[in-house]
Image 1 (tube, rainbow, N blue to C red):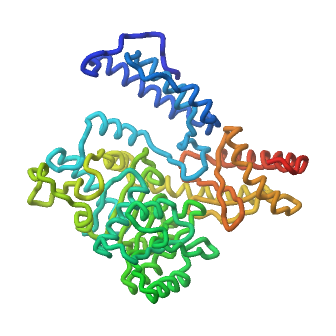
Image 2: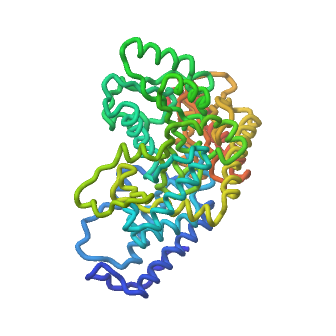
Image 3: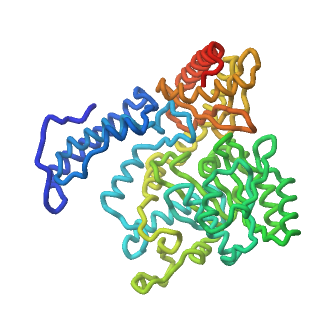
Length: 491
């Protein structure tokens, strides 16, 4: 349903507040709009292709000196923001890592914002602090970390990785970064290299090891690199493994890496931003053996735990490492210190002012239960396997990496076998999908090949969504091939 703009009221001019009736009317309208969106989301286009100039022309306006009726502003938001947004929670959005949230957590975010809960100091909100501590402990249990492990909620995987690497720097190096070296595969997420740079490490202090034939961190090449660095007087200190790469869903050999790190006295950090929650399924547990041996773990609950953005988590093997890394004691906060087991989360991470992010995960776990969330994760595995079967059956696609961790990668396969044509069609297909708007999948590069990838971790995707998306991609790719053959210079 659209926003009713038939009525108009004078905007409040003092105290920045509405009366009770106005708040209810505004709030009910927002809820009605959201419910309408959730009920009809699948009927919307997945994506809108709108360039900067067009969007800037629509939204640019002078800084408002006087207020406007809230209905007008809400209607503008719906028309000019929502209608121009790529809907990452749409059941036919298969690009990147879809962010499929749930309504319970949306309402939890509303409550956390509405009560304006400041979740940094125990004395300011003991209930919120305890909920976060409990939810972190639930995650600790799910991932098999020891009782003394701890963590906190952050914005997302970038800050979770940054926080974990800061702890590794402090605990392993005592803060001295001279000649220190970290290791990862060439499939690592850029959040890791960026995080190390933010922490002050030079680019040459990160060794990106070529991945193996399955796009996993190569253990033999890693051992060689560590030995060479030690011989050159370097200080290896950390290995960063991935539990589900963004490109292919590959999982590094976590158990073997844990053995190596133990032998070499290195820190093992796991970027499990989207893949770690697969531990809630039998298939995921088999693929993630060794995850429980990590010294630190980064997680995005707004990916495969179905939370709204932002909901990242950093976990470390010993909770005390967080305070050893981040605790500062300014004079004006001396009165918040406690003598017991209370946690002041401002000492557990980068932020002082913190949202109550844990509420949404806690509330959705309470309302839905772990079994329902596990089933939703398992559906992602099944849908990727179905997508692979459909692509193989279509006959015009080459499977580059088979379905794993809810991701399958593939590329167009012209009958002529022309590699250049295959790359061009595959590359241009992303733009054609954007133009069409029915479904969206993204592209990437794997060892010089242009490939498409589908990530199917949204449990609201149906078999029909997958079938129609594969059919659409086949039709669009065929049209592209015909165009490129007719006009070889066309890009």
